[in-house]
Amino acid sequence: MSEVLGHHANEILIVSIVAVVAVGLIGLPGLFALTVPIALFGVVLLSWVAMRQHDRRLCEQCLLSMPLNPSERAVRLKRRFWMAHTGSEPRFLIPYVVVLLASNFATTTTIGRIGWAVMQLSMVYLIMSQSTHRKLQPWCPWCSEGGGGAEVDETDPVLPQDDRQLI
Ligand SMILES: [Zn+2]
Ligand SMILES: [Zn+2]
Image (cartoon, rainbow, N blue to C red; front, side):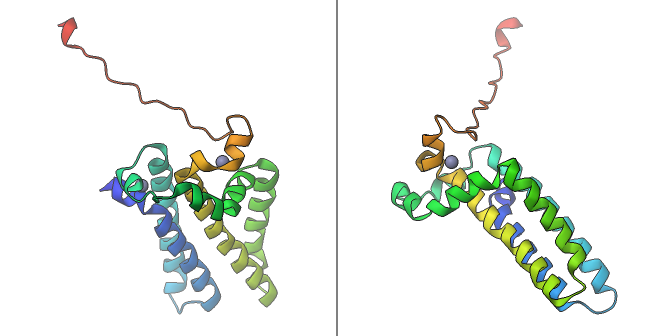
């Protein structure tokens, strides 16, 4: 179950970010204005954790959803690969997070609210880039160019030892 949840976590995450923006722009009456954003924030956090866990291991559903022509698809999604690499660099990530957080304090004006919405929605593209990159990493031009790449996750699971011979 948790594997299925993890597999769809990025979609849940995207939907809840869009919902956060919608709620922020439209506004909700009474008690909902307080409870709904808190609930959505919880969903965002949970799906983020589920997504990280999913990304760490090989998922059967991901393998099944692999495109038949991954190299062609990778060429078309080149911009997302670039985004996945640039987006994880500290010189981009730190100012991004600062602006992202700061935009929360600018929502008193209309322009501020639009800026806030744009910033929140930009996370959707970042998440999509990361998940595309993870799936099609062997065809990523930046990973192969950089001599191995920075994101190669070589954590082999430690196989359980056969204890029977000890008994
Ligand atoms: Zn998966
Ligand atoms: Zn790459």
